[in-house]
Amino acid sequence: MRIYLIAFIYIVAPVVIIYLYQKIRFFSKIGTVMLAYAVGIIMSLTGIMRAPTEEAQALSGMQNWFMNLAVPLAIPLMLFSSHFTLWFKTLKKTFATLIAGIISILTTITIAYFIFRDAQIPELWKTSGMLVGMYTGGALNFASLRQILDVSTDTYVLVQTFDTALSFILLVVILSGGYRFFRWVLPYGKARKIASGQASNVEENVSKESFEDYSGMFNKKTWPNLLLALLLSISCLGIGAGLSMVLGAGLNELIIILTITTLSIAASFWKKIRTIPKTFELGMYFILVFSVVIASLFDIHSLFSRESLNLLAMVGFILVFSIFLHLMLAKLFRVEGDLFTVSHIALLFSPPFVPPVAAAMNNRRVLVNGIIIGLIGYACGTYLGTLMAQVFKWIG
Image (tube, helix red, strand yellow):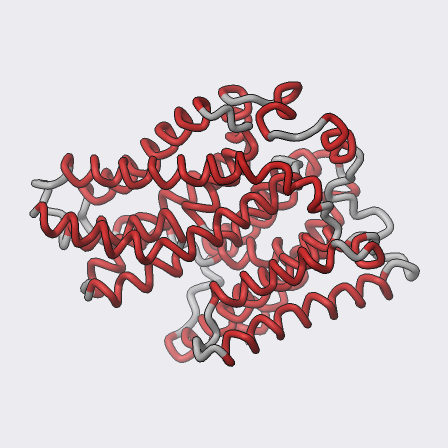
């Protein structure tokens, strides 16, 4: 019964959030993503997520299904309405901030390795390699490197716990307005056209786009077209999963997301698909589902289950200093503030976290850039993590 109640909350809570966001000014100021995280955290703190042992496995499986389906369905819906001919003009800056981000992360973790070399952190060279993979590609690479480097379960869980805690805090800070600091340091506003390499008419077209306007979304005239868009999104997911299976990779997240993104971009050039109303907002519904699920998994008690302040300090140092270094390089290359924000989030957290950040910033223009960066991080994170782990092992 508990599992059905949790599943019901996962599905219905985003609908309530959308209603409150659209109808009440106070909630519109907070933002849908932050409201979703608040619901998830409340679920965690109230104890509803502490399922009995006999239900724990079923609950975990259900949560994985929600997370594995929500984002792949959201990405096409959010990309169908995009004008990619405008975004292609920003690819030069996209790769500039990608390279700057990877350099900053590799440099920071190398510095951290030497600072904490004698801090008795368990399996430090393996831990450092896993963090390289984590912060250039996300949890997919993190899990892969655990197998490649033969990391003990205790070390893996400890690193994951501290990373989840500190990364969650960082994400909340950025979603709740921290991105404004990056807009202040880097070009923004009038300088955005120069910083992103866009022509003046690009910015004008972008400014005309509505963002998270749910009015009329539930009208009878809108729903048939939205159902069509949802079927197209499901088709993209099916093709991605099928291709991954044909290639013998199983349900490989990298292949699936890359296929979904490619098909969605191609579909967006067809005007009949691009002009379907409210596809972005329907995609946001699935992102809100994902956000509620993620936040409900957060266990504050796990932060104090192990005494390893040195590892906590190391992870905190990497998260903070990598942002500082990436920010300095971005300023050198005149990368705009929002592009920097999604690029760093894509590297630290992977593509699924790009849409919520783009939504919080009220800037869908950088959505594709962030996804591109995250996908490249997926592709190279495991290789970089393995390489750097061997370098750290050789250093000793």
